[in-house]
Image (cartoon, rainbow over all chains, first blue to last red; front, side, top):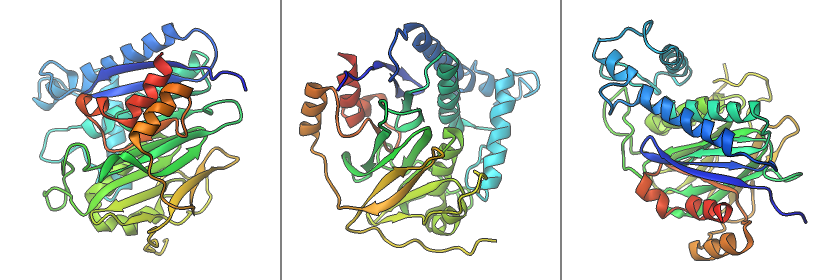
Length: 254
Length: 80
């Protein structure tokens, strides 16, 4: 057995922690520095906590989306697409001014993974606060193994997802309480403790996971329609649910 | 139109994924819940540099929450 090739970097950004884990042999300091710079650039553009960010200026009406950094229009377009795909439960428009915070982290990670691929890494993971894009495999011939934490005790693993070239996103109330709001009722969503979504794109999987928590028990009607995605649900009572395998099509949207 | 179906409960089982040839993965019900003791995992990750899992997915942790997380233990094994 040969030693596992690993280059790991941990970066604090966007109020959480990003783990960059490259499983290709070689020297990766340069590409990792580029990923770190990109993550902070995305935060600088999209942080609603920074008064000078492009998104803050757009929200106050000081900057039009057309005049803002082109990434702003891209992200807001994606928000609209996923709002449609989630029956309105993922929304960047709740209470007026656009707030794409729920999309930015997954989107930034997926782009960071693409950046690493362009720099020659076909096997890596970028995990931002529990949501991840996985490229290639963990070691030659061995797929990635992702533990899904128990929302009742985040140090326990409920289940393990294995796969190559996939995204895994989990949303829920475990770390920060009932912070996801049902946009239909305007009240915090509490019926679902956690939802994990797997699929090819972290941007979409992350938006779906957030929407699924907001849906409450409606998630059981919506999730089976998600072709190309698997949805794992832990309800507030601790009961676990899994969508039946969907139709095998190239369509990756609900 | 796909008829909505309520999925069956997974009580008493754990879901394990299987890699598909096209890169997609499918969750299937198999085995039993297998709690991982943090201390044991920490030791395993620190000593062997290789644990049963590569990463952890869960609700978004804060910077402080990360310090207590399994993901932190897995990262430390690769940072040494």
